[in-house]
Length: 254
Image (cartoon, rainbow, N blue to C red; front, side, top):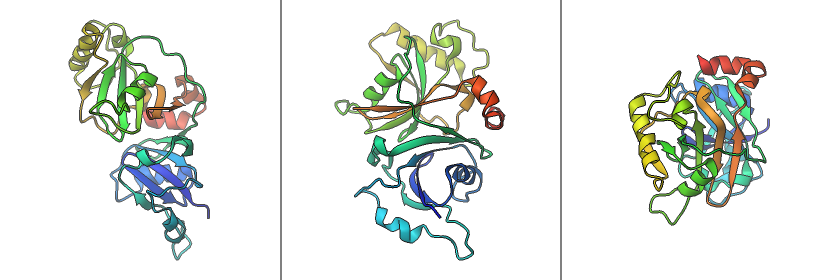
């Protein structure tokens, strides 16, 4: 049986597994005693990737079938500073799983879309997880967060852009409509503060944002990068989700 490498981002871990990416997502989201039921997000990592930081030499001896022939579900290789030590070139598709184990594969895109000016809401996912509003576009935000000249920075970061609806252009009186975020008035005030101070690029909305967030609110997609480069994982359009990925979309919207 083939052995796969996965970079889990909720929680952060490097895991070897004999499960295919789709089967791993179902197992990781709902069938794992070590992790409470919930969303899962993970990258497929190049099996040929080498590292002195991780015990890569243990994979073949530890990730073996059970005596009854059942594939080995997971072998943890690291749970600390994992994203930091995996080169972006080793990352394959991003997989996002719903709470009931439905998995959507998002391949990386070679091209970034154009980002119009406006305020944005970012859910940081790994290695830190605050929710922030920003006047920076995703490329600028990635560079800002990984700038080693700043006293507070991270070596690499994975984040998603979430929809702000009308608040992106009009935080004071824009319609909330179906925005599901808690404490909308606080969100309004954070964006308004940025609007009043053009030199302030970011404002924390929630330092302890829950790891689960509504996938239906992902706008543009997911981004992972460091100070030099960034990978883009575009979220399919709502129409694509409703047609090509209907079962996943129904689960994500429930």
